[in-house]
Length: 242
Image (cartoon, rainbow, N blue to C red):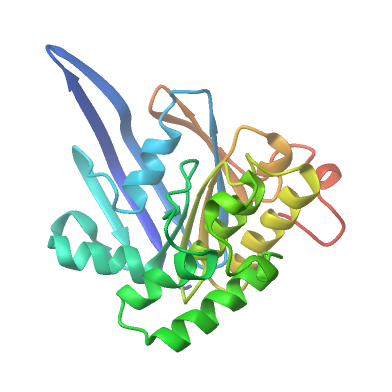
């Protein structure tokens, strides 16, 4: 079997507010293999976004191990960690983090250029990614010239560009209509089918139905890990999903 792309083992994250200790995560375990899409569900404040941030090296656990392609993130230097985030991890978070002064194609190509890819090649890859998410014609527009849904697609294209092995998506369809949202989930599913590993945070069962399995969080604790959401077959389009 292929080695896991992502491994979380006994991950705990505590936040201190004066004398009060808030446990965002408690001893969480998660392994995601190449080709697998895992949905994470739970109530607001259950630890879903914290888990995603820790998985991508954007936050540091108080205890436990986080491995991405066999590299223990907490042991890496700041420069090495930044390189893993650029090369191996694609992020789609609720805060899109697009740079207002850059066009869509410039926003998407920036991570590749920062990683040493020549400008012309990086732009070509970025345009291909924008085409993949259906907004290639908007490549030269700035974020404030696009709708919220179009900006969301730019953020998704940025997550997909290059050879990202781990895709982390936090409610990636939030600003999209149902048809476009399903197209985005189909893209994530296709990237996983091509060998990436994906983690999708969602509160909607019809979106979790695209996943191979579902992890449920409650108050920072993994309370259940199961196969696809019950009834997923009826929620998936023909040819899509679990």
